[in-house]
Length: 295
Image (cartoon, rainbow, N blue to C red; front, top):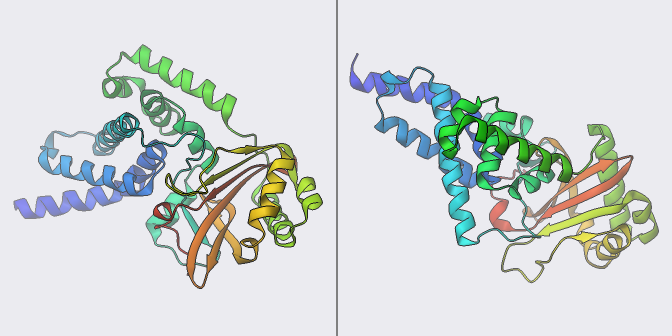
């Protein structure tokens, strides 16, 4: 076979795995731009390798993306780039009715919620890798172990520890998409009216409100907790923005985008349990909204 033909066939095969690899990297990194960088690095490494010796290309690429993502996480931690308290992942979002490309549609359909990604960010890089690869993508511990430079038994322990932390920290959410959509609509209506009492009836007593406006923004602050404090903040600062919001799909679930004159301002995600909102996550950081489609 002509080498150029072989390279073209390899590229075509790689493209078939790209959506899966992007999903792995996004769950590892919580960033679409970094996920794309990790996937591109996997392609470069594949190009430098003898692909004829790779028996399971999908498994090989998943392992490479996992290793690259682990290195990126460690570098991020060493630089102190994560802002504890006000950090949120890049949302995979699109306004209702907006046309998205097939790759984004696939990622959105198989994505995990922003709230879970916040919890994953609290894990150590090795714990996160073991949990994501094994629990989310069924990669055997025998394949996870070399990436984290541990034995399979130690890799199993990492995943087990991560699993316990996720179960203990992930927000409870028992609402179906219709309930979530209704909760978003009720929340936006109360926010538009600045109706403090109605907000209290919508919010769970232990509701958590996170806002990520970027590390240098004057809006940056730790999460707010409790229905009265959250409702007070929404009435004081959210009422002007609520009329600019419209329904959207945020990481595959009902949420909202806020826009003005065709410019995206923010993406809002909610978690609902027992008919009330238990978590509100709003991403204002413009650097994290580049992939969101609103047209």
